[in-house]
Length: 65
Length: 311
Image 1: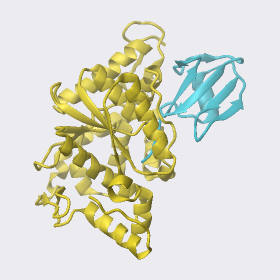
Image 2 (image 1 turned 180 degrees about the horizontal axis):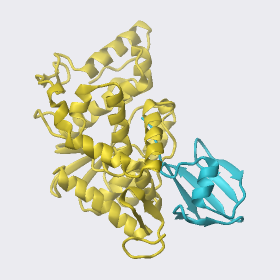
Image 3 (image 1 turned 90 degrees about the vertical axis):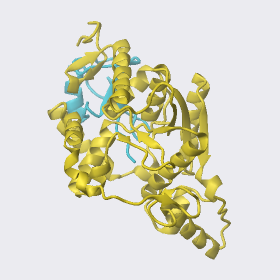
Image 4 (image 1 turned 135 degrees about the horizontal axis):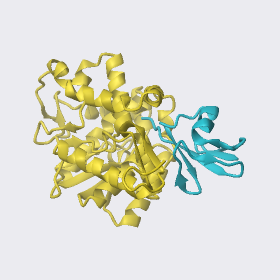
């Protein structure tokens, strides 16, 4: 699957799919309390299954100042 | 996961309420929380004219959208800090939202008032830009509210902002700040407008979800001066705890507000008066912003730069 991370610009990576979002987040060290993950314009809950062909986008929620 | 309200497929999980919602029910939940917060603290009423400070980020634009949908009378205020590139992009997002919704937007520029941007003032006075920025923003939104006849100023501070401040104030035992930290700051002088934070129980993640669902075009980038800010470290630490123990952030803040009286003695009685130069409220003869600008402009004239001390 393709993972697009919208943090300090845009970063893309390829990761093996076939797992739940909670497992993927653990693997990528993404805290789901501080990020939202979107597929096809729809926000995903942690139990969503991510397939090998999926493209997901990760949006950070934390801002400073 | 199913929506707690309508049992459709859920999109947004809200673990601290042990709930998940579909897009429509999440918006209902978000609006209800904002409405509840406004009423619980009697922040303002439907007849009040609210000045909402907007930055172009997801929090203030989501609050702007929510207040319009809830039927409040809101005018937004964008404060142009003169931060190269960033301020222009922030203003563009605010203008885009105003054009899309037809909502009123005012702008005020530090450079137009003092002839200096925030980074320039910080450099000339050898201050940290974030410290100058906070002081100048509070000064300007109070001034704009008074001049525009607004009874209340609202900001987009959310639960993460509040708990990060709380943690920082506790770690450094800033008892004076602890005594004054609350989602509603009443007016304590005729020239000091009350300040409110209607998002204080909603997380940044919930504000982001609302912005994405509502397709609000916000500025995702950080202020270049916020890089490495301590508040971000505190937010990350608190979110690690939150992931292991959902609800910690909300109970931390609510517990503090419940026990706030413990810090009351540190909220010293101060005599408020009007600044002899600009007329804004201060505890000194000359307010801290006028003193800051005087130092910046003196330095400007020594270096031969062109300052515009027109306040």
